Image 1 (cartoon, rainbow, N blue to C red):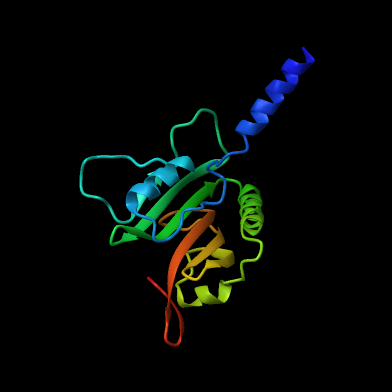
Image 2: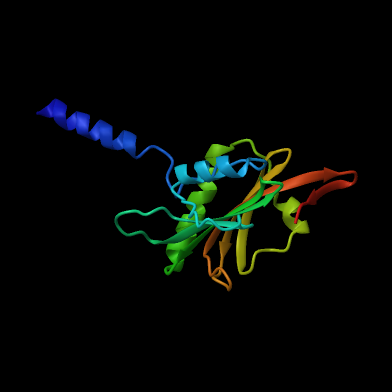
Length: 180
């Protein structure tokens, strides 16, 4: 009986260790649309096929799931030449304390994922701040990618509390220029 209990605990703890919708998004800029859809599905965000033209940006709501959650989330992906140039995961919470807790969790998870990534907040200065920005932490994770975690005051049109964004950037002759 004791071995059966240990086996069940091992199975359940292993199942919880994979990619979840709360994990930092690991999609890379430059990924093609088909691969992006698959990787986002792995993160529990599903593309809805409607047979019409391919939208840009493309929206990925959370996949169907059982149970309740603290808030809602969805991903928006913008493409150029069928390659990802920007990804944004929006999360809404009705409780501000939960939003702050989630933002802190996302920042800590990003630091674990890229412990040596340099701070890139100054590189975001060429961009317009997201509406309702209260705090932002940003990292350069490779020569063409900045990842940012925003804590937001819910503001139209998205009314999000937390935003995780992945931006493609390109070097210019006189510094760094963020692609809009």
